[in-house]
Every structure is written in C-alpha cells, then in structure tokens.
Amino acid sequence: MTTTNQKGLIINKNWCKGCGICVEFCPTNVLEMKDGKANIKDIDSCIMCKQCELRCPDYAIYLGGKKDGK
Amino acid sequence: MASALVENHFRSNKLPHIWCPGCGHGIIMRSIVEAIDELGYNKDDVCVVSGIGCSSRAPGYMDYNTLHTLHGRALAYATGVKMANPKLKVIVITGDGDCAAIGGNHLIHAARRNIDITTVVFNNNIYGMTGGQYSPTTPTGEKGTTAPFGNIDKNFDLCNLAKAAGATYVARATAYHANMITKLVKAGMENKGFSFVEAVSVCPTYYGRKNKKGDAVQMMRYLKDSSVNVKAAKKLPKEKLEGKFFIGEFHKVEEPEYTEQYQKIIDSFQKER
Ligand SMILES: Cc1ncc(C[n+]2csc(CCOP(=O)(O)OP(=O)(O)O)c2C)c(N)n1
Ligand code: SF4
Ligand code: SF4
Ligand code: SF4
Image (tube, rainbow over all chains, first blue to last red; front, top):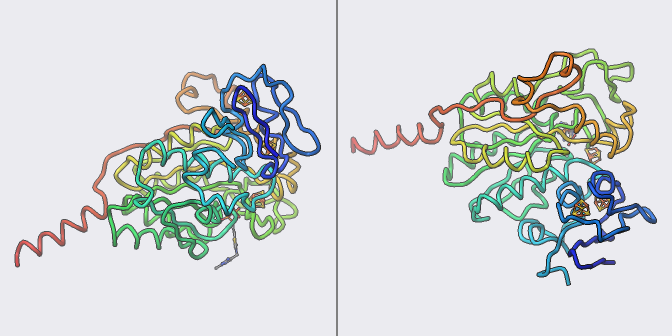
C-alpha cells in the first residue's frame, strides 16, 4: 500500500513496523499511527524536512520527489 | 518500493531487514550508506566487514563488497582485506559485544597500527542477538539476563578506549542524530588511518525492556535529551552536564598509516634488486 501526494511523501506500509519514531519526531505533526502503521494525517503541514526519512529504522517513509513518487 | 538511496545502495530484495521494530541499527546503517553516497565512492571500491550480532547483520543488506565473519574478528578480516588491496575503502560494522568484549584485542591493535579502516560500532549497551546478556558497555548498575541484580562491572567508554589505543579519528553520535553519524563517518573515511565512530543505538527489545527504558520512541528521546555536543559542553556550567554524555568529534591527528609504511618496506627492497 502506498500513499502519494503533492509533497512526494511516501509510506511503504509493507515495510513499516509501527515503531512510531517518525510520528514522534515530525516537527509539524503531519503523521499519526493508524492500525499499527504510520499514516499521513495532515500533508499540508509537511515542510519536507526529511526528519522522518532519516530516522525510520525500516526505510518505510521517504520523500520520493517527482521521480519515484508516482 | 523505496527511496533512490535505498534502491541504489541496498540489496533491496533482502529488505525489510530482520531487526525488531524501532531498533536503532536500521537508522545507523542508513546513515553510513548516505555517507558513502555523499562521498561519491564507486560501490565496487567499498568493502564492509562485520562480525556476529544483530549489528553485524548489516552488511548482508548493503550492496557493496561485503564480508560477514566470526564473532569479534571483523577487524582481523578487514586488516587482511586492506593489506591485500589497500585501494579499497574498508568499513567495519560491529556491536559493543563484538567490538569490545570478544573483539577488544583486535580493536586496540588495529587502532595502534593506525590502519586505514573506519570502524562503526553500533553501541546498544547489550548483547542483542543472544537475548540480552550484559556487555562491556552496559552501564554499572544496569541489568542484563546475566546480571539480574545489576551489573557490577565498570563500563568502557569506547571512544576513550580507541583514542588511548592510537586511533587517529574518534567521534560519537547517536541514532537520534542520524545526520551527524553521516558527517562523522564521512570524516572518518577521509582520514587516512584508523577511524573509530561510536554510533549509540537503541535495543528496545532487550536493553530497553530489561531496564524499563520504555519503547523505541522513549529511548530515542533519551538520546536526544541526554547528549551534549563536546563543542557546546565547554561553554555550559557543570550542573547542566550532569547525567549527560558527549557527542561530536573527540580526536583527530595525522600519523603514519600502516599499509603505507608496509609498502615503503616493500619498495626499499625492490629498489635494491
Ligand atoms: C565465538 C562465539 N562466541 C559467542 C557467540 C554468540 N554470540 C553471537 S552474537 C553475540 C553478541 C552480540 O552482541 P553485540 O556485538 O553487542 O551485537 P548486538 O546483537 O547487540 O547488535 C554473541 C555472544 C558466537 N556467535 N561466537
Ligand atoms: S518530511 Fe518532515 S514535516 Fe514532512 S512528514 Fe517527514 S518529518 Fe514531518
Ligand atoms: S519510523 Fe518507519 S517503521 Fe517506524 S512507524 Fe514510522 S514509517 Fe513505520
Ligand atoms: S534484539 Fe535489540 S539489537 Fe537485536 S534487532 Fe532487536 S532491538 Fe535490535
């Protein structure tokens, strides 16, 4: 399952192990936990800072950009 | 489906990795790969060597030349690799048990030789893979399955150990400070000599549970709140440093490198012929 949007923020739910690290350290509260996985709650607030991508132990959330964000 | 960095530098058909939810090792492994990417090295010129442990499983996922060896012996193998082919960029990935208990002797001697290897230790303060025995970095008083009433040993400061043994680059960051790990690994790889980067990790499954440190998020928060950059520490009053540990660059000097010294001896004999 994939989520794509205008910011190019992608969550690969197959790889997400539900640790909650991305949710906790997102500076603008974009993310939430839903059914044990990370989920985008408010994409408009995303400042594309990459903090979630840097700290996801499972490479399940990332800014894909236009290239592989499709 | 993954980021370009992950697609380019990992054996992505082997992902997701086996590490537990919230294990800090995955964050550190990504930071190392980012350093290699930013340095622009050809993947075939990189060799990653590990011992045995959860941390030591990392090279299995990394798309370079990789060697998964014996417990504690990564530096011995890496020394062989570097001597045989000094052009390779050699990185050792090891755990606190692998590096400082069974492999402690290899560590001090590799440091003493100043051989051009960058060692990154994933320090989670415990033996993760075998179920939570205390390690040489388990803080005094903390628990492990082999120290149910609290560890009475004094723990090593790995950076002080590496520096005292002769490493020419010594630094520490944490899984919370993912960008800093990348920066330090880059500097370590650019140092011509033995570089030691301690990456403080989190093991929520064993260390966290045994010592009631909370979940992965709480353990990451601790890393954030309890670390102070050495540069900033100089300006802080003593009471602000209580209960804190230092991160950043601790030591950087230039000294003759082992494979170069060895080559000089070979060259001196070849001249005589
Ligand atoms: C010679 C030998 N002794 C003991 C073991 C069992 N063993 C496997 S991993 C490990 C400790 C791993 O701890 P650490 O290096 O800190 O890595 P972590 O799993 O915490 O990442 C031990 C004792 C082994 N594999 N080989
Ligand atoms: S990129 Fe930054 S702002 Fe956007 S979700 Fe990730 S951490 Fe939050
Ligand atoms: S950090 Fe990664 S694995 Fe953890 S909840 Fe977020 S997306 Fe999932
Ligand atoms: S046991 Fe600990 S170190 Fe090993 S994968 Fe699980 S959390 Fe990580």
